[in-house]
Length: 197
Picture 1 (cartoon, rainbow, N blue to C red):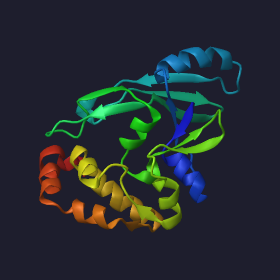
Picture 2: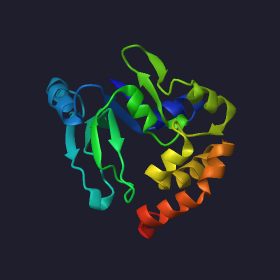
Picture 3: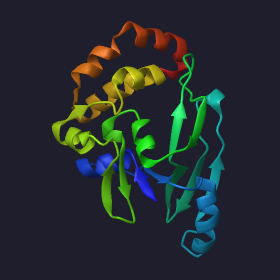
């Protein structure tokens, strides 16, 4: 069991966060909750969960299980790897993935960190040590080359800018250069509807 993404980033930055995403190695969120919730029924308030099915038409491409426990809510999903087509930002296929595959499919290095609950440690599966370093240096970078990341999902250009502004971080030079490339602009026109912006 790992806590993924934004919560880990925010804790390392000393920022309060209530956005808990749980990533599982070997089962779906529903399978996890099917096993855990019966053991936690006596909590106050009672523990429960609901499954939100994937719905690509509404940009919800991943089934998510929402676990309600002790008055809070956790999103529980499996680690995954994804494949994209040239004309959609929604993955064409998803399968169970390794922690490394899941980290590399994420938008930014600062969002690709995991907190391993059993080992009680932060994990950086990008293998480059960039995530914690980028947090300390205030850098916005992508785990993969920015062109690959932005062509898969051009909305990540806007997310990069948003996170840079939110944390007063600096955009990586290569990222900044690639963000204005003609191929990324074309992908924006092909893959993104105006409603998404």
